[in-house]
Length: 481
Image (tube, rainbow, N blue to C red; front, side, top):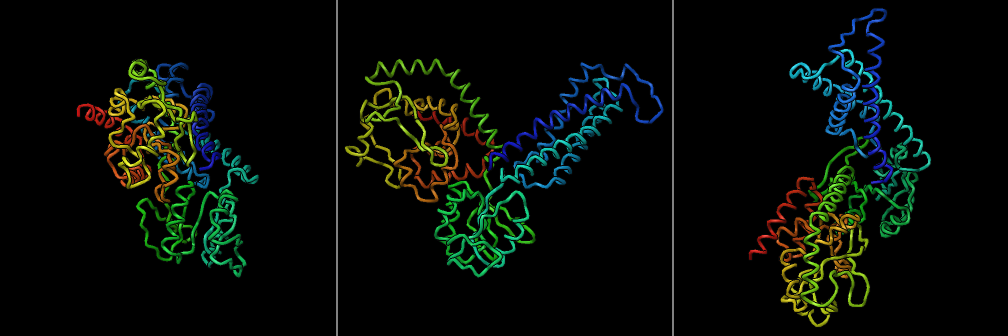
């Protein structure tokens, strides 16, 4: 998702808050000087008309209720392709629901003085101001799109009649910049489509043109080639669509839609795009901050015991050669990794030499040494209870990791990943995760990937909460064993 889409999607919130709150205040002032019926002065009952301070409080509450309703109606979509009239419909529907809630509360509860005419003014102004605010934002977006700011770059795979139809329609939409199409054999006979290369050069073209969406119209590619394209799109966070004649789909996270009468099969983006991404980051930041503060006494105790138990540093953040310890983060980006030291000094590299034959994870790219002699006495306790991973809260705070996510893996391990296994790199690694609580290090790597894939495709904030709670029980169970 483009930054401009995130920016304008998020900007709707403060704009709506200001416009709704302003409409309430304007309604209050207008009610003091005017009535609904022209030239007829209605009596102003001071007992039922709220004072200014009361109304400000009621306005804030009413504004928040209005915004919550807009959220539930999906009015804060990050897609800038949404039509303006559909946004207006959502605003009107939200305003009606809001009005019904306020009226119901007033007649049933009767806990605060209220002016019905002020309520009517507020409702009219709120709808008008929100629509005007959305209109201004839309105008700004369209202006930026003329300068190619916020446009999504699209590449089409195929060269047939469907390709021509798509190319024709997409060029009319200001949000899209159709770079062209790739074909199997550089067939330039279709003059309605701009052919920019062969399918064999897909990856080079995508990187060169910074492609953000791919639409495949060619359905007769081999199943292996189709899967390669799917996996490549997933690994590189590229939105993938398929216009089928007939296709056997092996994915569960798909949605079917139509575009100008053409059927589209789309790999659904994870819920961690858009608002999910923002919510998860906010949760991670404050969760890590609170964790670091509350657990600081435990940090000190662990640090003291590590120094008493064996020689060496408190933290494991340097390799035997002095280089910083790295793990692979989101989209394959390496980051500096830190945890409490659980091994004897200068013994990390032994996993690739003296202890290589003791690897219990030969089913995949991961390395786990059985009866590892490098681990210190206190290190065994730290690993069993996962307390050695507590310093990773700092990585969460910085934004390199998440509280919940796939396991952070070594660069040399990631280099051995198969294409479909790289999907786990589309998310920040976590201190804990679905795979960790479902078998910890006993799972086969493919099973771990399946669990992480399920987590990415089905993320909800309550799933994170469940995983965090279950992690505590898993740790205590391991400690008892």
